[in-house]
Image (cartoon, rainbow, N blue to C red; front, side, top):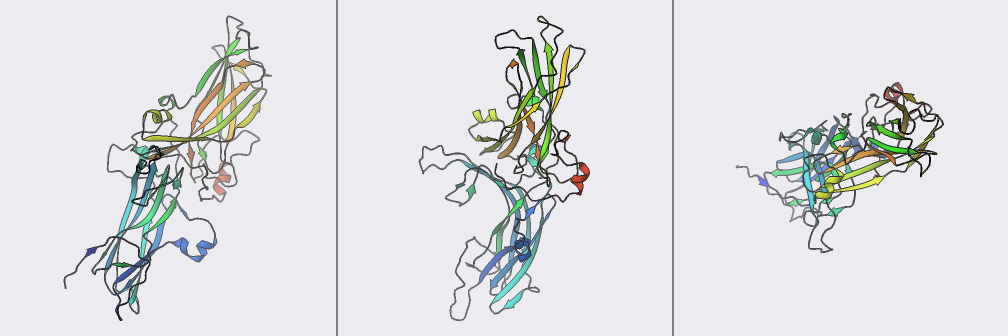
Length: 441
């Protein structure tokens, strides 16, 4: 008998198979079953999260009414969806601009097997196992895609939501989801009755993000400020007796994957005092100068409805109508320093160094970049010298926020006496919590 293959259009029918006399029309029900669906996994109460290199194992439970062969194409996919704010003056006939990009797809085909099916009356039950692996990085068929876009982004749903009326898909600002999805079903009989089925399951993915080289700050002059110089006066209306230069490099990355410890890093600030030689070349900074350091974390989330070709910037949002940014700041932290140790170099400059521990909340999304969205962090540091008059000394430094489980020491640690960063051996011996934070930022 010639086999007839029908490509079925998906639809979910909640009705049970209709009975005509004693005959049952062909019907099929498919459920995607994951390990977290079992009772022991549910009892722990924690969401299952996959990381780079992890396996996604499960099986399809397929119940058919009647005996027929079928083939299921199953895929593990990664998708990012974005949309921009309403720009239609409230006109419901104009939908806001939106975009969708599939950046990951792994497929496999599962077939019915008469040797393992279980027959119960008119029903046949099949259990078809599947297996996927979360990759460490993406592979692009296009050679012009920058390597920064080939890193996996974490699962997240940020900003406001928008439901497309035609496709019933949800868009966020941005929305990054991974899912196991049934793409296609093929049968050798006409099947029009689909009982209650599950066609896709979301998978929470938190990829490991190894350390990246420091950012070339000079390539982003409007985004970051690693150095600033201001004149210094004894009183507001007196002549300046010198100038203060404040500078710093990019701090070591901040690793949110830390057990029992608050994620932290250290910003090393360099102070240089240059005396006004016309005023007094022998003047020197006083060791009794007390400094106050204020800092906060600047968090920017970019989302675009057109593919980005390079890292987004705040200035680009002013000229690109397809790109928007959302910025928030953490609580301002204040630290005071006294008794600075100044030393003089050959260029008649007095120099001192401040190490500022940067601690932050644990609920941070790691830095990421894909062609429709990005998350960036920066530390904004302000320094003032008590008892003196000077302009604003403010630095804006890029900061990597990573999610990395290795025992690698990410930075210099905190100041002596500040128990912010664990020693390397303690970090390696600790039970690292691999669950991602419940993102609130």
